[in-house]
Structure formats: C-alpha cells, structure tokens
Amino acid sequence: MSSDTLAMAFPSSSITRIAAGALISAVHTAAARIGFTAAVAVTDPGGHLKAFDRADDAPFLTAEVAVDKAWTAASFHTSTHTWNDYLANPSIAPLSGHPRLMAVGGGYPIIDNGRCVGGLGISGGSYEQDQQAAEEALAAVGFEVPTR
Image 1: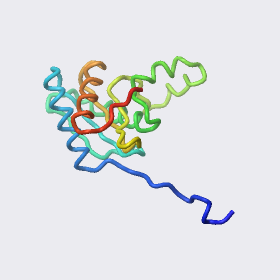
Image 2: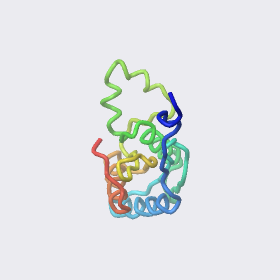
Image 3: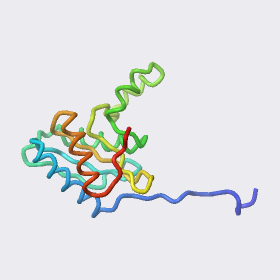
Image 4: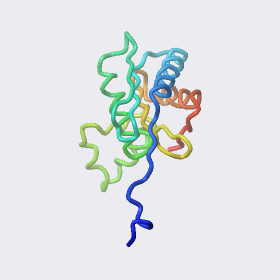
C-alpha cells in the first residue's frame, strides 16, 4: 500500500480557550437564572482539562464531579445522563466501576460542525438543573446541543 492511499493521521479539532471561557460564563448565567451555583469544567476532546471555574459558594465536591462529567462526555461523545441506560446492560455494567465514569446528568460533548471538540461538565444543582444549564450554555455560545 502506498503512502498516497494510506491515511497516517486524521485532523483533530479542539475547543479554544476563549470558547471554553464563554461556555463557563454562559453556564454561570444559566445557573443563576435557574437558582443554583456551579462548578464548570471544559475538557479538550481527549478529556484533558481546558478550563475550570467553581462559584465561591459551590460545594467542594462539585469540582471533581464537574471534571469527571466533562471527561465522561468527551470520552464517548455522549451526554452523561444517557449512561444510566447503558449501564443497565449487563455487558456494559462493569464500566460502572471505572473511577471517572460519571453517569449523572450535566455532562455534554461539545460538538462543533459535527465534530466533538471537547466535553462540558456542570455540578452544583440537581441533575436536571445541571443538564438545563449545560444545554442553555451550549446553545448560547453556538455549539450544537446533543440529543443523546
């Protein structure tokens, strides 16, 4: 096989620092409107932390949970609230023992032009509030809101 026909790599995209900051700001705005304070994590598509912020009065555990939600969402390009259904499958259930897997709403892949460019994780409200703030923030910044 010649190197002309064999792809040796694929181009990848990652969320920018400015877009990550805009998402964090949009989450805090949405969370304040909804009625809670949050920790917000943004990762690159490999799950590495790109940006983070925790409101002054958000509980300290929200920091770790937000990071793990973002990591989980970026890992399979899937929102974290869908993991409860996945983990009900006995073939997938062993993943529930993974220390970073977060099967709680509030984590979303960050999708730009059909490509995952990172993960967004929010913790501080109920799982419904975290999900709502994430969806509002993604839409406000101009990212796609995943349906799963």
